[in-house]
Image (cartoon, rainbow over all chains, first blue to last red):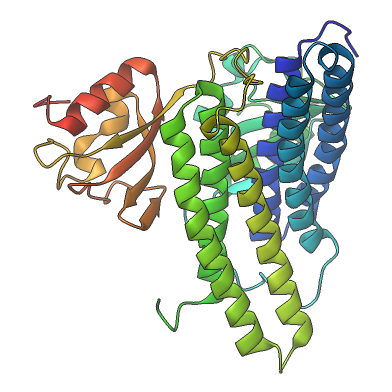
Amino acid sequence: MKKNQKVEDLFLQMKDTSELMVDLAYSALLFNDKKIAEEVYHLEDTIDDLYRRIQRFAVKKTSKKNPDMALALIRLADSIESIGDSAREIADVVLRDIEPHPVVKMSIRESDAVITRVNVLPKSILVNKSLGKLRLASETGMWLIAIRRGRKWIFGPDENTKIKNGDILIARGPEAGEKVLIKAAKGKLRKL
Amino acid sequence: MKKNQKVEDLFLQMKDTSELMVDLAYSALLFNDKKIAEEVYHLEDTIDDLYRRIQRFAVKKTSKKNPDMALALIRLADSIESIGDSAREIADVVLRDIEPHPVVKMSIRESDAVITRVNVLPKSILVNKSLGKLRLASETGMWLIAIRRGRKWIFGPDENTKIKNGDILIARGPEAGEKVLIKAAKGKLRKL
């Protein structure tokens, strides 16, 4: 934990985390996908950690000078954390296999592109290449929305982001693209 | 209210509504934009209405045959509604001008495109044209994420969606594109 990390950065990270949690929770529900639902749980650890850091910042740095400011910061962080909690509840429906599954009949719309989680293996052609070089979106139709690297998350990776061995990629796109991405990540494809 | 509307459709509408509320609440916060924050309030009416309809469906149609199913439906709707509540709390920070505004210093990142709300006037060139014909995204860089038409919302409009006089457009894109869109909606532009 960097001591000088600005509180605004913590808020932006909380925002990104909560948005991804909602996105993944609904995708898990639509596709009845337990792997995606599990990612919501991973993200909850991240958001809880950020929440505690904002609380600590608010109490330490602002409360003496400005108690209202401290309360406003905590209240805002609390609202963002609640979004994460609700997303986790939705993921729960998928993970716990609550029977009868209330959304089994939820028809997938054409606009609901597949969301997928893939593990990048050492021999994959993706390893150590930047997204700009790989042109993943134009070659496969799959849009990389986040990367989990150990306990760290990269939200909205850009053309300079390099994929590493062991990365967990969270991507969205057509089913055909999903198949190509899975093969590429496993090292079963030499060219996208 | 259509009697035969399927419960799955109600859930999909709740999902879309909650996602848009989160999106708009954060945009309102980042850009300190009261007009966008107000849209979150409008959407809360929509989500509350859907929530009540799902509850009514669950109790009437499923509870005798299958009380667990009814509870599962209500619990899921409850989680989705909570996302909307949290989004509204975030919009509150902007609307109530809670001082000192905790996010005044929240630096806008380059990736945070402007989100805007524009009112389509009768003399606008947009009126009665489909998005496919207008090519709004390619001409202006502005991506239409939703349309509010009276009390009705159109989420994720497609190329066949026609813009009508009086529509409220919610769009995202670069600042330069926002200016063009506002002029076009006001009827001050004869060509995109």
